[in-house]
Length: 447
Image (cartoon, rainbow, N blue to C red; front, side):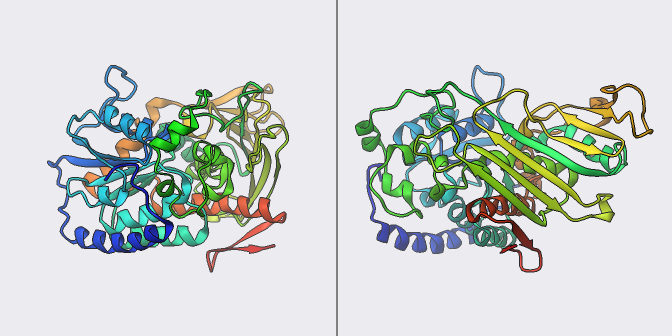
C-alpha cells in the first residue's frame, strides 16, 4: 500500500472498526518482553516532534545529543506524508526498517512491542486506544487529547490492557523536580498559596509562531502541488471533518481548534504538568481563562495572548493550603521570561527554564517574614545535585518501565490530570465563563 492510496471517509470509519477487532486478536498472541529481549519500536508520525523522538530512541549518529537506548530497536515507521516517512527511515538506524502508511498495519506488526505516537492531537485518542487493544506499550505526545470523554476512554483502555503508557512531558526527567517537591513538602518556603507560570515568545514580524514548515525555524513555504502529491490527505484528516486539502491546516494544525487544543495542549500543558509534578495537587477546582488574537492576525484561530487562573482546594495531607496557579502567554514579547515560581510565606522558589527544561532552581528569602530575614534578593537555598540522584531521560524511563512492567512517570493517571487541567482552560476561554471541575462525575460544568 502506498501513501497515495486514498480512502473515503466512509471506508475509513468502516476499516477502523475492522482494524480494532483484528488488533485485539493479535494482542492475544503477543509475547511478553523479558529482561533479555530486544524491544521493537514503531514510530507513528515523523514530523517536527516525531523526527526528534526517533533520534532519542535510535540515536542520532554523529550527534552526541541523542545516544541510542540500549536494547531498543526501531523496526517500523509510519507516516502519511512521504518526506516525513523518508526522514523516519533515515533516522531509524536500521536499514531493514519497515514502512507503513496505515498505523493499524504497524500495530499488527508482530515485531513491534511499543509505539511512539507523535501525530496531530485529533488522532491521539483513536491511536492510543487501538494500540492498547493490540497490547503495544505507548509513548504519546502531549496534549493528551481533545475532550474529557476521550480522556476517560483512553485511561480506561490503558487500565484494561495493562500496557505501559508515558505522556511526553519531559520536564519530569530532571532531579530538580524531585528536590523542589521535597523542599516544599518539608515546609522550606512556608505555605504555598501562589504559583506563576507562563510562556512568553517572540519572532520576527513576518515569522508567526506555529507558521513554520516542518521545523521550528523553517519558514520556506513548500510547493503545494508537490505536498498534495506526497500526502494522503484523507488519511491525515481521519477523525476530523472531511474537507479539501488545506496547506495551512496540514502544516499549521496547532492554529486550528478542529485538530487540537491550540496553545492549551501545546504550551500550557507543559507548564501546568511541571507544576503538577512538583506539587502533586491534582485537577484544579476551577479555571477562569481569557485570550485573544492581539498581533498575529494571519487567519489562525488560536489566541496569541492569554491569561488563565486556576483555583485549587487545600490538601492538608500534602501540606498545601488553598492556592492559585496562573498561566500567562504572549507571542509578542519574550523578555524577561516567566519561568515557574512557587511563592510561600517565608520564601519563593524560582526555576531556571520553561516547564520541560527546568533543571535548577534557587530559593529567595522573604526579608519581612522573619524566618530567613536578611537582604532582599538573597539566595537562601539552591538546588544541590548531590542530594538527589540523577534521573533517566523521559524516554529511558518509558523503556525501563516497558522492560520491568512498572508505571511511567507521566502515566495514564497523570495524563488525565494534564488533560482535565488544560481542557478546563479551553472550556472557559471558548465559553467566556469560569469552568468548574465536578470531581465526583469527572466532568467540566458551568460556573
